[in-house]
Length: 254
Ligand code: SF4
Ligand code: SF4
Ligand code: SF4
Image (tube, rainbow, N blue to C red; front, side, top):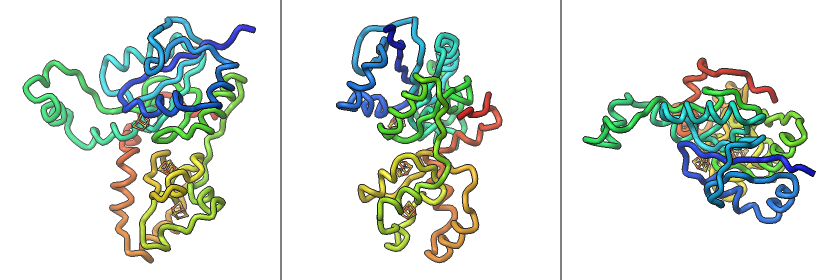
């Protein structure tokens, strides 16, 4: 049986999502029965100009990256964006809070002229994306599910209910009851409330649900005397690139 050729690529990111995949353990063995990994910079030195599925990590932050992702899109039959950097712009989107010239000078000082930079964009804001795996980093059970859908040519529906639903199923005591603010009520589920289960708050890394319960959220904030600015600032930590959403080149199909 000819295995599907899969290539992993990275753009602006910390490569933490690649690390999650590389550390998948037994789940990786299952997946490797189905695919032939032909490029994956973090775990192998081979490269390939031929692949069926491109799995793309990182956001698009330079003109060179725009050209490179277009070439990858032309080659791949299926493109999966994985990790918040790729699906939302992620933490790189914070660059969009400042004038580009200031950012360039701050980072590169007197060498600023040598480095090309553009506003941070998620991958789908540059080329069409077939599948999204949100999260910083990706939640591996969801990554495996999406990869299997892609291999079978089936759609994957990204959960569009809030993290609170999973958090409740996991029987966590709500952080608001402990006087701690949390982004769970407006953030897309799918991570099995990973952070809350492990004693942290939800930072909103998976992006906002399409129909947030604004009134309910406002009531909660008022009751706990939390400023809406807190929510806005936290949300912008991962989702600032959404301001460029009008440049989106396609609608998410699944
Ligand atoms: S989504 Fe998070 S873990 Fe993944 S590459 Fe970006 S910063 Fe790193
Ligand atoms: S607000 Fe946070 S802690 Fe409370 S239920 Fe929602 S996800 Fe869980
Ligand atoms: S709990 Fe929130 S911050 Fe943590 S992985 Fe899930 S969506 Fe991201």
